[in-house]
Length: 165
Image 1 (cartoon, rainbow, N blue to C red):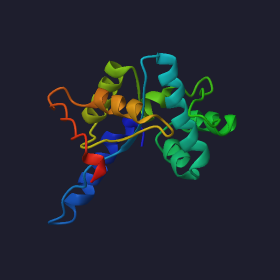
Image 2 (spheres, rainbow, N blue to C red):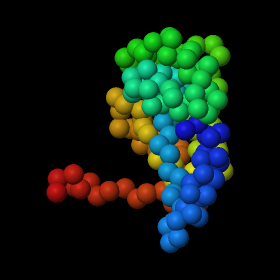
Image 3 (cartoon, one colour):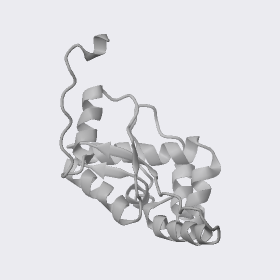
């Protein structure tokens, strides 16, 4: 779902759970692709790749969900442009850029953290970040660190011989 669809979906889940005595309201845990880079163009290109990949290579599920939530025109623009190139970056067709903010967390470290906070404010109880493929481990760790809540302490380093066990 796009971020703008979370509140309405959460309301539907709550209404459905209310009709089933003893049933808890399902948790809202969206998987959110992330693209974090100090270079804003690189972050936007990675986020664009995510959107194009999901809409062109994952069957009709995501396209149909976007159509149902009012983003049919934008989804169709992405699909018409075809699958993204290999390599993890792309550019969305003009008019489809709104999907970057609706479907991903992207930008430099501060922008990405603010973007993840938007998902929480929109009703996501536990967003699961989806890391980009084919990236060096150091880049992935940096991405995760940039998304760590400020009130959560930094992890301690693993012992040097931890990998040998």
